[in-house]
Image (cartoon, rainbow, N blue to C red; front, side, top):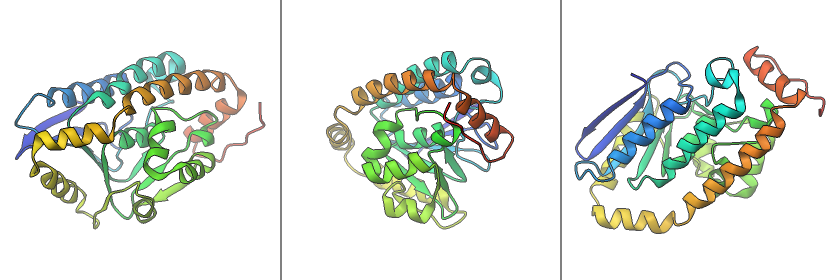
Length: 253
């Protein structure tokens, strides 16, 4: 199965199982959305931990195979429809981020309420290095979390942000010692689960008021920009360079 689901002591664990990179598509995001929504009316679950099997949290979409390789636009349209539903989930969510969260994987991590990282975790908004506009609602979620200037730094350079810097930026809310990522994420989940559940949901709804509508608007804009960029030589070069593990050479066309 691409997603494992379990519940213990008021905390649900959703574990992506597409190692090592845990690339997503419409199917996997839909499974995450459906599982998360199922807990909104389940009194046995007060918090969700989103994690992944293997070396990396999530490397976003796989442009080298599957639906995205065949048709970027059609695959993104289907993916974003399901991704928007993540922001309708009413249960608090914590992302346990090991290895890298890249591109859409960063967007998935930013859809959660909290992110727990390790010192060697890397958060990467590499969209410009692939030759196209950011997606997965990152236009809203990333500056919401770390501020406009820090978000611009990440998006325009495409550089890697390590765990310690992520903690300083508040992109990571907890920094676990190596090997203790899940333990740290579950400790945070337990703290939240120990609070009054009706109050927790009400407070969360107030803090996130309007976020879902802003993300949906952003997704529409992001996709429109991506449609333009995916037809350019720069985008073809950026994606090819990433798949070939070499530096891209962009020519502005």
